Length: 195
Image (tube, rainbow, N blue to C red):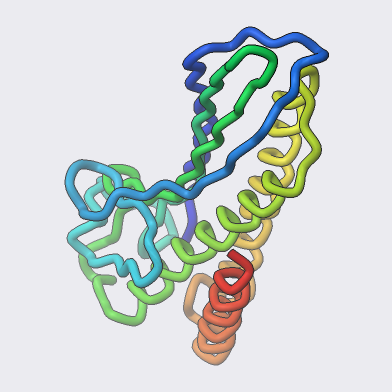
């Protein structure tokens, strides 16, 4: 099962712009390797283990486990004379403290289901980056453009996570789970080729 962890972070190094200013935009995926602390940043080939699920299980929940993953961004502005540069750093992360598993469900099969939730978050992170790179920005509209792209992509992420859980019956429908494993692998491969 999936729990949304969507971060919308702004970090303005310097922000003073006029409508006539030229603006360039750079969008990058940022990820630091390792498992230190509460966050695991997604990198291709990143695999979760049950030791990463540190949250307290909700005993009343019908879920065997919950994966808390999503994407976020930071913005930085640089200004040089009449030129502004907007730097957008995007990440995809898994929250250890907000992800949990009930002890009797710590199986490789359930872990695979939860891993696919993290993979779906990364797929939408790449879609988000692609949309940001192809957007048209001005000094007057950049914040609204980014917010719109963020909200649309975040909604699509939630919809796909819910579709995944619904169709697989939270992994209980094994043939459909196998089909989704293949679908997610294919999406990861095709989106990674575009980058």
